[in-house]
Structure formats: C-alpha cells, structure tokens
Image (cartoon, rainbow, N blue to C red; front, side, top):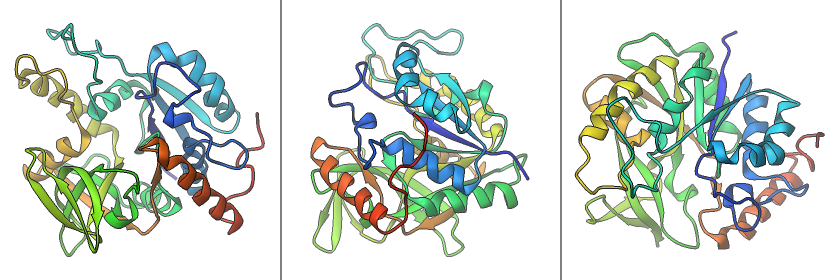
Length: 309
C-alpha cells in the first residue's frame, strides 16, 4: 500500500489566536474546529501523515491548540510559509504583506512531502467522500512519475459551496464527458441568484454560472514531482509581476490551469456531492455549527472526534 499524506495550508491564520480567527473557531459539540473534521475524515480514508503549513511565528500557539493533539494519533510534520522565502535573486517588496499564495505554500513543504498527497485549505469542511475518492485514486490509479502530471481533484457542485452571507471565490471548472478537467477559472464574488449563481471574472466582467457546475475548493491530489514544477514556475511568476504589484498570488488553480492548457498535466475530476461548509464570514459560524450538529445526530461523526487532549 502506498503511503499518502494530508497537507493542510494553514499559514493564513491570523497572528493572534482566540477571538475571531476563523480557522480556529470551535464548530463541533466538543470544541472541534474545522481542521479536526478534515483530519478525522482523511485518516479514516487511509491517509498516513498530516503536514501542517503554518507561519513560523505561530508555531508555538498552533502546536498548543491543535498540533500536539494530532501528534498523538498521527505522524505530523510542519512546514513554514514566509514572505521572504523566495528563490535566489528575488527579495520581498518592502510593502508586501499579502502571502504569496497556495503555490508558494506547497513549495515551502517540499522537504517534508515524499509521497502522493491531498492538499486542502485549513478553513474549509470538505466531507468524507472527497477524501475517500482521492485516497483511492492516489493509491490505485495515480502514476506519480507520469509526464504529463497525473493529478486528481475533488470536484464540488457549486450550489453546495455558497455562503448565505456574502460572495465567495471559486475555481469554476470546465470538465469533459470523461471527467477530465479542461480548464479552471478563478471567479469572484459568487452569490446565489434564483436558479443560477452570479459572480465576476478576474477582469471584473459579470458572469452567470449554473448551480450544478463543478468547482475547485483547493482539494487536489498531487505527486511529489509536481512540487518540482512549482519550483520551476515560481521564479517565472515573480519575474512577471508588474512594478508595484504587492497583491498577486502564485495560486494552485491558475498554475494547474496553465499546465492543463499546455498539455503538461491531466486532471481527473472526482465529483463529490458532499456539502461544503466554511467560515468565510463571521456570520457563517452558527450555520456551520448547526450543520455539524446535524451530522453528529445522524451518526456521521461521534460526539467527540478524538479522545485526546
């Protein structure tokens, strides 16, 4: 059986824990946070290791709140995403405060990822189905040495991923009849509008999207070889930034979309009908907590996920 890892991108957590940090807001009946449910589902699906990508200045607090607890039930590694962790010849702009994005986050974990892995966001609830399908793909179908890159993705139904409290950003996917990704477009401020969803493109153009459209929630099944491609592409990304641009990020959906269009990657979309939950807005928390309580009452999860403190 192949070894597999769960990689959680958590470097976007605020600099002070406690009040208002969405990734660490309790949503479960025993004080569980969203990450707990992702870890529980991934371990049950067969993943062997958990990699947390965090900021170095948060290490002590992060380990106290979740890391040390998870270390008692799984093999845990840490990687650190920092703004000044750049290739030779590049320096952080003095006024850059925004992280470099999910592509750079994964690059920072290159030294601790040696096996096929699934990567997710820290503040999204994905459900069980995606982890099961991706683990099965990584173990039984993926060729980790394939060129083009052999990638899979948890494909969520747009209507299952919207917030009632404001617009959200999603990678809107074009998928062919074989379930192969043909492209993914970052789309912003998506909101439900009767039987459709409406949002805007990167250029600000209004777009209309069917509610049953597949979207990416940054749940990708990848091989260690993909990290080498990220390493090659990062200097090119940095060199292409316009002077004064301190916000553009090196993002996984854009990177993979580019690889798909250049025929350097083939992405199998593994559709899941599970409903996404996330604390995008402060007002989302009560609905997420209620949804988790519902899953507990249905027997999907135990009252207490992990019997450790």
